[in-house]
Image (cartoon, rainbow, N blue to C red; front, top):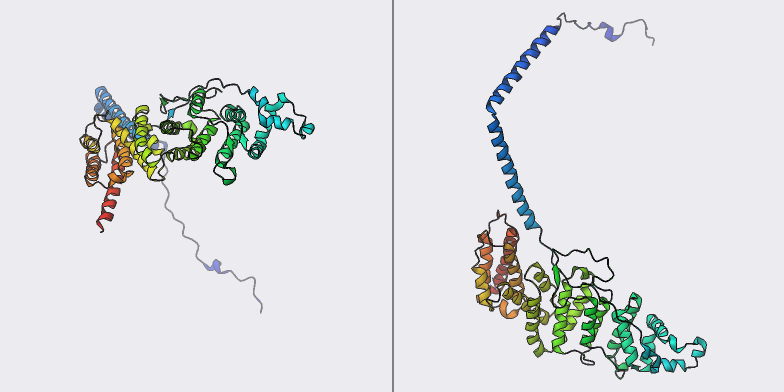
Length: 462
């Protein structure tokens, strides 16, 4: 089939598009100039009206009102910010350290253990001299051989005991101090083992040795200084300031010596009471946060030291001592919180400490449960001059005081008074109150109220 290539194409049959004869209007310079003059007149007219409206006095008045609104808004924002930023807890309990005592012990040359080694045939290989005895013992201590040799010897002589304990407390070499701590802990704990019950220890450190070490460390026993809000770490680059590295060994030794009370008791109940206060004060130092675990272990070891009859009396003494030493601010909440609840004793101590802080909050004007709760109920929380931070502290202290003591948390009268305290906090403080701590108090009270409601619901059997 052939196709004629000369035939026209399809689109060639279509009609050509119509061409509009309408001409566009040409805008000339005269038209542009007229539009410009019209627009300029409108702008000039608006400016005259605005100028007539805005006199100098009106502008100043509006600016002053604007600035007042900005300042008022900024003040409210500062209040909210202050409420959100709770001050840090903490106290500086370690000041500047004193000069460490000398660690030379001439009496080591005459100790029976070292003399027996010098006379041993093996010494012909080592060729140890008497003057090198202390360095030799340090090497044995670091390598762990001293413990093995002393254990096989069956006796820890007085001179070696005093020397190794001083290494534990005062050695500037961290490895040597840690080795001495491990040596003493193993010796004391091994006394509980059957095969070493007849192991003789000629000398044991007492309370005075430990307190003397704290004094050298710069521990501020009776007057911890500087709250965390004012504490500056500007002097901590000095070698003689801040907590010493040996404090870790000190804490571990105290923990272990209390665990073996039935075998080698070196403390009285009054001394252990003081040590518990010292331990809780150490919880207050933020520089010791890394030691929280061994501090907690030591605290519970000290608590377990007492017999049941002793603890009831000592618990109150410890709480009163802490309330006398620490201020009733945010830091006192840390003191209560540092007592972790593991058993009935720790609960009892936590409750007693919280109660004594509450008594101190009211300047000892009230000293019984009903009096404290009535004093809190009587507070007018709508009073703008009342510091709501105090109420926040009261809420947490009462919570720990009541619910850590089984005799109190089941008292219906006290629980009802506590419920009134919580209702006051939620009713007298509005959700729009911008005072510092207002939202924290309201939210805390609401949370505790829910806990109370749940407790009553479960007890009612519904």
